Image 1 (cartoon, rainbow, N blue to C red):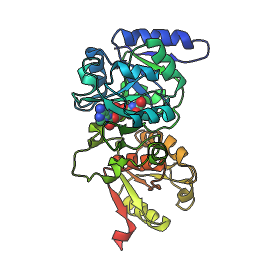
Image 2 (image 1 turned 180 degrees about the vertical axis):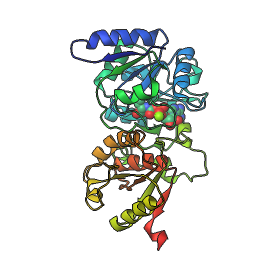
Image 3 (image 1 turned 30 degrees about the horizontal axis):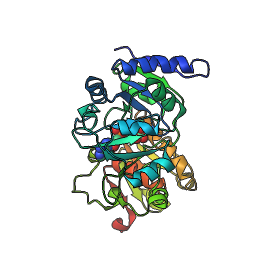
Image 4 (image 1 turned 60 degrees about the horizontal axis):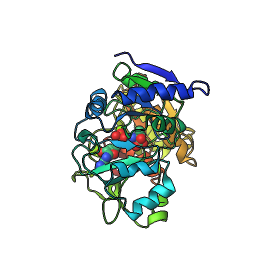
Length: 348
Ligand code: TXA
Ligand code: MG
């Protein structure tokens, strides 16, 4: 399949939306930027169209998709009811990086969107290109992140091309994304809402609006099946294995030296502060200052992907504080590492 590429400019904006929307309406899969990561969209009411997403990504069939809308009122087309908590969240955070799980109104969406569940995840994105395309298409659009299943999500059109060129009908290039990590997923079908995936909206910000919520990511024991089906799969992983090194700068340097002595080529993923304390190396990638966790979130996937184009055989990363967006950063980093930590305290 030849993948049609558009580069959005002020001049061709409307024309691009019209062409891309036409493909979506015709049941094709088209990738586009959102303020979190790039998504690959298809008509959420068309089962064959949605099947093309699973096919292109190589995504397991039991992992449901998020439905994207351009206007809050569209929710009622396919949602049975909107609980008060959810109304408050929509009012405060939409458009924005928050996906809300709501009770499904049966018969309105293709069954493979929700993977057979009686709930549906809904999001109104904040990116002007996403909103423009969704508004012109006029249909609810199912859209997971536009990466091959298991890889880090795409934060640029080039990342999408790398993974999906030849596998989908089109890619709308609209520059870099904003947050750089996926939306927060919150289940509002429960008495006490639960965060299933930390993301662009922090738990602190949510609790300021609706009071205490459960955090699945923090509280669910590893052996229990996660409630967001997607969270059980290997995710966000570059080709080389990742380990998180917990300790001081001397310990971090010692781990690099040890690995190199064993013939490894070590990619290093650290804050500016730690970078300044380590010996310079060709494969050191900065994640920005610890004072700006938003910058770390924004860079993470790009840096993880970058290592796939180098010779590194092992990646050592620094842990960041699990506060605000840092919660989502560490969630992704721990998944990329498969939970593998090397801790100074245990070494002593
Ligand atoms: O920021 C984002 O959310 C991006 C952009 C493109 O909007 N999309 C995205 O989609 O990250 P995806 O498919 O990569 O992740 C969706 C997550 C998965 O973990 C999935 O299991 C969960 O949301 N999910 C979707 N519908 C659900 C439902 N009804 N119940 C529980 N979890 C659900
Ligand atoms: Mg994804």
